[in-house]
Image (tube, rainbow, N blue to C red; front, side):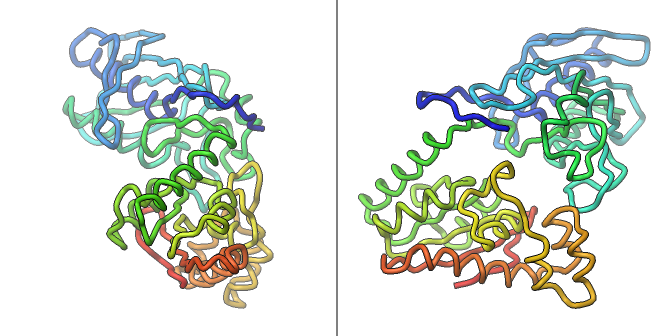
Length: 346
């Protein structure tokens, strides 16, 4: 369960993926040079240089281990204060990832990592692979989070088929503090600014991947991009009374499924995908498989991009109903995890 923080300036934090990357770089540097860098500096996916202090340094004849205490800032993240540990062994070439204590394994399809792999998401993997490439050679990287198995019981991992621990997550390396009231207020201010600037078209997206795709598709200025996140209702309701001529809603398939089903808060802790509803749009031969699917992404993999168009149309209907009488013309774009537009309605 996630709790709201007081309305104040909130401190950002770091993802488990960023911490794992920093620990990996420290351990690998110790293997190469014999000395742990403390603090250790890494480059985040968008180019920011950030440093982490080491909480653990251990070294053997052919391995090294480093640990970073995760600081989630003012976000009430279940992993805040945990130690993220990387144990590294050299290889001639290539990078192999393994799950240590407290890091889960993927056992069901529909996730961004294949079944049988450690639950280390693609962007953290890419960050660690970049560190290995920077220092040369190959590496076996084991990531662990002591106590992570118990913490994972407070997350959705079990339902998603991630067994034995937590996931190593993050697409930007940065955790932006979670506060419903503060976030919705920032959406409202973004709309106010767009209206004052005379923008005829604004876009609200669920995350950076969909935001990049929508902005590129329409050539919108950054000031027209509203950081909607999970708060579709907060954006749409405010626009209904403070309209602009045109609104685009963009998001990944799973988030747009929930919007299509009528959810206005798209956070995983407050709305869930209705697979029976999704099955109605699936080919008859796949309906039973959809009913048994693990995630919305699993449904997309089963059915292909065609089902995304049904979802986009239904999501547009929900948006239009709530904007009725406002004069705002809306459209909905669905993107896949690579940022490819797979459906567009309106």
